[in-house]
Length: 269
Image (cartoon, rainbow, N blue to C red; front, side):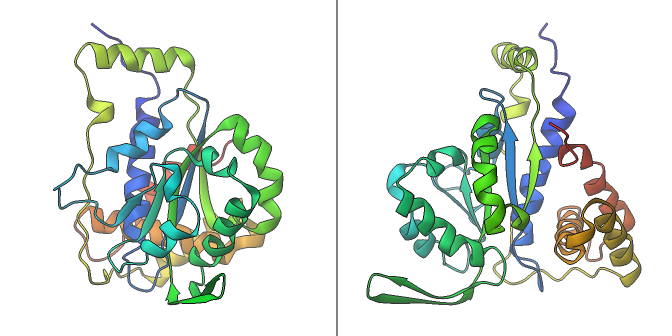
């Protein structure tokens, strides 16, 4: 019988975070939260994200727009995804975008930076002006560790990385092999599709001032110079957990679900 990988817990937590991030795009009063998964080649980063790629004809996960080919890069895909039902652009192979022509990459950053936070108002494509009415769009992506290490110094000054939760999938080759053995033995649990249903209207989740203060204290402990941004990020994730659990009010137990994943972002590697 195939041995289960030791890191299945981390795998499932990451999978859950992808779903929670996608919910934040529909929360009332919150901006869509973005997520970047960093890990070695063949660790299953893309497969993890694609658990949320719904087959044609399935009504779930329609708020996620997957970018799967080079023709979808650049400004056009972002323009097309400003449909009210879309909350996130999903890029399973983010390093492919960083290797595109400089103007394509810079164009992507130019529109994505405001889309991830304050929203895009006007954007020019040549002489043509596109009006987005402060539209927002989150990003869910994965990138190989080496590619991330190379591009990180260039991204840091732009504020791009501070706009997202960067998490790490440190799956060893041995664990990846065990996962493959599970798959060969008929255990497809790690690749099973995950579906999220979101209403078209904003989702209202109450979060008390006391719980907000608890989350902000945590944010101060890990990012004292970005308490507001990081605190808002984790508050949104906590509300997303409440929604996924079927509750209308965020509770300490919902925050503890998110905090239990902290080893994924408190990474020294």
